Amino acid sequence: MRNIFTLIVLSVLITNCNSLKNSKQEGNGVSEKSQDKQPIVVQFIIDGLMKDAAETAIAAGAEHLKYFSEQGVVVEDAYSNSPVGRVKLPDGSEPWGGASPPNIGMHTGTHVFETQELDDIFLSARRNGIKSVYVGGHTLYDVFKTPDVYYAEIMPDQKVVDLAIKHIKEDGARLVRLHLQEIRSSWKGPEGKSNPNSNYIKAILNADAELGRLITFLKQEDLWETAYFIISADHGMGILTKSNHLSEQLSSWQIYMNFYGPAIKKGATIPYAESPDVALMTNHFMGLPALKGYTSNVENLSHLKTTGVFLENIFEGNPDTIEHPQWIKKYLENNNQSPPNDYLHYRTGMLNFINK
Image (cartoon, rainbow, N blue to C red):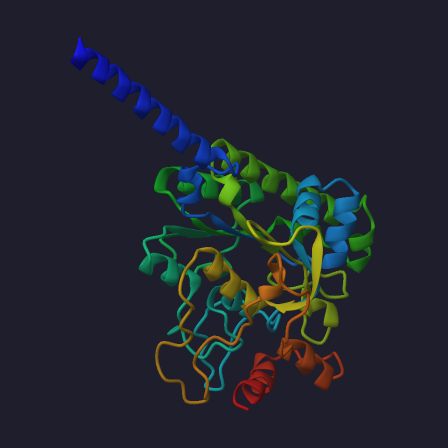
């Protein structure tokens, strides 16, 4: 009888200890499992999206863009790297193929692109056992081969998101870089940005619906609670009816940028950011050491590390402003907001800033 009594007492004590442990884990509304989970980080890039167009789309019913803007941080004045079509160096070489400079900047955290010998967010993820997927909606992006899984083909926005969902589910991808391209075919001139009935705004609404589909999937997979999103663009759009983005047109440099995730301010704005900053923040959201920048010596560069800025002002408890060099904005101001459509001209300006 004594042994039976002892077993009963031990059983009650163990049950009470387990109940106490579970109540502590659930006390903050976040399970122990969620706390230990590798966050998923999504760069959701809508080609050519600008702040004024995003605001029109939100007013026209883009509910997911609205959610992220109200529950995250929007950049008041965001700029891309040079919006020219490709990187062409003084010797005539094009080390990045048909990829435009902002796309490279969002991966590497740098302002100039002298070689492919650059660290990037995908290499950083791999070093730490994090799976990545890149889905680019155009063949121009076939130079990006550092992700674990990558696509670069002309495809609808729905397929871009379908492929992301596939590799999150099947391969455990936790760094997701998406580039939705369909919006460009709806551009008929800048007037469409302010017209809620334009095909351009409707294309943004379609992209918003795909964003919503991804959100629903992440919630179903118990990944939403620790998800980070950067919603942005590779460049802005020009002032002509043709779908282009020439450097001499200021709007080609101006992009939409929105950050969302744990510990990020809600419904806030910060004054300024640039495309290279996106790479630094992406890497930080994954919880990884700083990006390395160039991995070999470069003749024209005195500073081989990243040149983007860590945007500590997006986080709760921090001031709204930080000291940002604003190199791209200064370059534009130095050239009367209308620099030539020439990567080498931009490159010279950035090298002058970097090498000071």
